[in-house]
Amino acid sequence: MDHTLSSFPIGVQLQHESLLQPVAKVPPARRVGSATRCDEYIARLAVDDPVRDDAFRLRYCSYVAGKHIEPNTSGRFKDIYDDMPNASTIVIYDRGVAVASVRTCTLARGTDLTSPARDAFRKEVDDLLDRDAGSPFSGRGIEVTRLVRSPEAENNQGLVFLLYRMAGYIALCAHSQVHLACIRENHTPFYRRLGYEAASELRPYPGLSCPMRLMASDREQYDRVRLAVPAMDPLAGRTGDLSAFFEGGPVTLSVRGA
Image 1 (cartoon, rainbow, N blue to C red):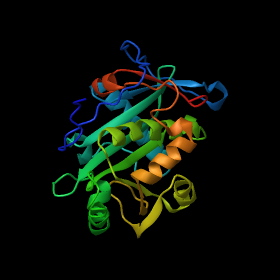
Image 2 (cartoon, helix red, strand yellow; image 1 turned 180 degrees about the vertical axis):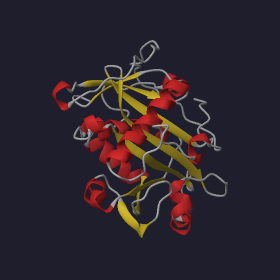
Image 3 (spheres, one colour; image 1 turned 90 degrees about the horizontal axis):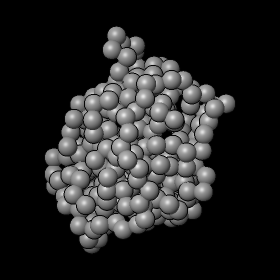
Image 4 (cartoon, rainbow, N blue to C red; image 1 turned 90 degrees about the vertical axis):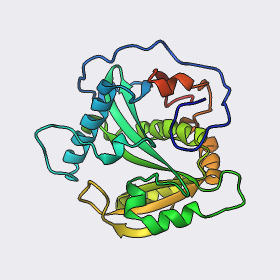
């Protein structure tokens, strides 16, 4: 599986039953309210401009609604990390409408790969990457960042699990041992339930007006959580060999029944 997510090689091909469908164009966006919530969604990696634009638009709408950024004339939010070779952005669609997005940034000790967390919490992140030197994959990390839902889907908690499901697939392929997230103070209890622990005090975070706290987990803890919560497990149920995902192909996801 050679999808060039980071500067370190992917040496293990994950073999599972495929559920990929033929690539289809994404229809124009429409509003999706909680009353029309469905059980199945489509996830895509943002490898082409329309999907990338959906991600930037979702971020903007979410951050403006939360008063974390000032409105701008473009109606989009992107940053310097989006164009870095270690960044991958995922968009989830509900019947053709982009409703949620997340970005991952892979990290590797001894390289110049960076992310918002590493730039805001350099010492803490580097110390985490230096742990477990005896592990064959020591020094590999991933930050899950820019996790957003559309204002119309802000109460759909299942979307968060699906975003972490696909971000987790990228983490597995990259053999990430250190899992990072920078979160607002009020989200700390939720991330603790996902196996994260606080790794810093609150601090300014690139691009947002609200202070964020670095939280960290590891591969062992991630494996425990994904096995306990099938909706978060990229290898559960029907989820299969997702190699076409890295080319922008659609992946069908369900909150129910994994």
